Length: 304
Image (cartoon, rainbow, N blue to C red):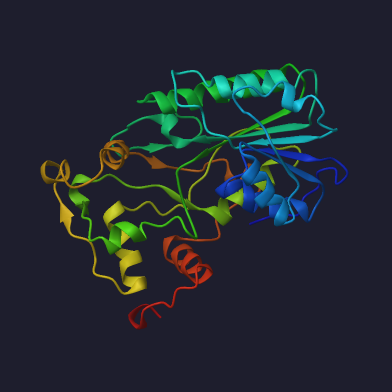
């Protein structure tokens, strides 16, 4: 469900980090009121401007001077990743400091369900304890706390969206399928939690509306293993399903980064979705079909 916005149409929304998710969010927000995208490179800013999205380049690791002349704004959607060092999100800290004494109505921070750590496949919801198992997730949890403190000092709404794996057009494991790479077999793989980018954008729009506040998990509600998800994609595009391998064999055939991701297992529940005024529109089958259609794929005859 995607409700119509009630945020003050005269106020600008800053989107800090306007990449894959942010660009789609900016297009939706631009139909409701002013938007300003903040991106790292001049080339990205020019590309967004050419697409009708006002944008400017900002050095997110030294933003003070580049934010001095910002006009008024009433909302901030912070989608930029941590800088990748340590366990504190210094990039967000510098960004918030550069905003000075500005007092937006709401700060939206896009976090990760990785803050719950590995639960061995057990269900986690918004009330579950956080126990991030890697530095990147600890940075995200630190950023959540920074955002909440900053908003608390300004009587602004803080909204944290904890997001699992994001997929959508041009963010599918097609290259791995075409190369014939294997996947971890189902019995060695925990449930995978995902959300389609358009459902995520709808949740971001809902999060910017009063009186929403607090932490929300997002998921499509259909956890399935990577093997099942990739096999579903293979069927839709008419490619062979990937071979499934055990952990021992996977060490030399699957990338270390993907294996590290797969080592953590949990089932994510969105207990507060009703408070957000949101529910996912796309299950994995519908989400993959929509993504492939947007990419111009002709679905295989068996998948129609």
